[in-house]
Amino acid sequence: MKLFLDTANLAQIKKLNQMGLVDGVTTNPSLVAKEAGDFEEIVRAICKEVRGDVSAEVVGTSYEEMVGEGKRLASLAPNVVVKMPITPEGLKATRTVTLEGIRVNMTLIFSANQGLLAAKAGASFVSPFIGRLDDIGHRGMEVVEDLVKIRDNYGMKVEVLVGSVRHPQHVLEAAKIGADIATMPPEVMERMMQHPLTDSGLKRFLDDWQKAKQSKPAISR
Image (cartoon, rainbow, N blue to C red; front, side, top):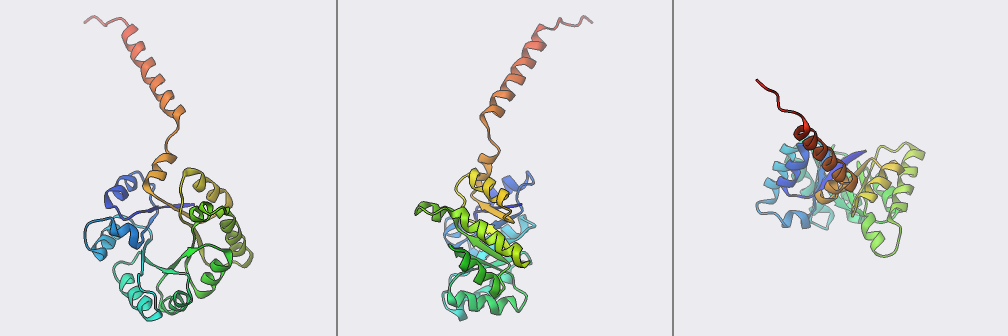
């Protein structure tokens, strides 16, 4: 499974990318608004740092706006994927730009039916938001299970990108289900590295090593 970072912070992306963990990045208007600088320059910088796919989202709501923005965003770098919302206008715009070779990540998906329609419209990625579903008492991962099964049943050329990831358990569940990608805030990826037994085990190894060094007789010269 590919692991993406859900952020527009270049410093955080670089830090984790140096470990070889970052397969791609997803951004949205809210994430980009937190960062200083021009939106398009931020996207270009991320695309330069990360070899994988980088999702950049349109902000228009009409078909004409989304098509125009989608074409402009796709021109920023070869690895840009255009994010569009699952609305009637978004589906129509997705159909148009995908026929021109532009890849689309259809976002704000909260049901398997929405994901199925996005795939039919030509989206390369469908993004179910599991954390937001969990917040209102639904089991968000059920949508992922349904989408993976639908994709496999019909051999659809679409990737299931699990979004709104809140904690490492979400990533583990997505991997076990067979999702193609999980995108997460940097702090979630960092928590995936951590375990208290790792910390205590390392401390014990180092303590034992220091004791062993101190107990050895000095070598006379």
